[in-house]
Length: 462
Image (cartoon, rainbow, N blue to C red):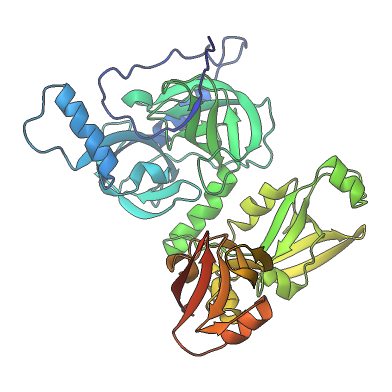
């Protein structure tokens, strides 16, 4: 018999009182192996970590169904199920004068009201300045005097092995402190957020720690605790925090604009393996460091600036690039219309390329303007000797962007286009010519499996 232990990624959503939900054991004390104590530092920082209580409106029918089942199991089937839940999480005061508090976006997303409870018992209804789901960062503001803020550190200077402490409200236990070290940096591909570049720590983090502080031994904020990797919703010493340098960039945009509008470079990149470095004859001291450009979108800033497939991006605005994710996370936090300098390696020579980032919608409009009916559709010329239809010359659909009008019209990979507006087409060139019209829609005749259908495709809006 096989026994499979399955780990789940658990976003540390604010603790909700749920029967049978017990806390896990914590690791050893932060100072057990040292003669010094963090007590003096914690005295200066503990009051900057607050309790965040959010009344969250339930919009997901699946969650409502789960609540109804839970109520029925507890003998509370009478009456309608609540349409909101109250959760308890954490937040960090980062500006005492202006009352700014950082927490996680998932803590306050869809919240009807947010209440901040200070360590001295004062409580305030907070104003949501803005949130960014992609990085899971939100900014609150309260009007209060005599606040204490945590000084912001520099997450670019931290190293694996540095000692850290996590402060928050796990399971509603206000201002709890756990300790450990930085286990890893630059954790990506975890499926937690859209843009990931996490600090990993073994300092125990539990539900309710979301939005809390990860501090170094100087008492500086180096990260905002966000998630844990855990079986059965208990801590096993694998926690993740958003680096404070990312928090700073997001916070500045939220303060200035109330939202985060990311600029788009419009290139595809991948990591450089030793074999790829050798095959491409990529020189330098560390040939696998950087990200190689694999594709360039039509009409993108990358194309306009002269970036070529095969270029190796080494730096973005003087920030070293180690891998493809570094490009995504670095560019992903720059605002639309930002001027960016890329340092690329081309034929073993370094070259600076200035680029102005564009808006994702503008990039889409530029691409769709060149092909308004087939935006987001990958295709190739197709020939088949069919026992049913005989010789078939047409255009096979290879891929379709789910956010395109072609997808909405039910065009799918594997379809073979053989006609446009009752005009027979046998290749991509003929298809483009036949679809060169000012009409708002075109009718495609396609072969699908063993049958033939007509599809009406709308022109993309610009």
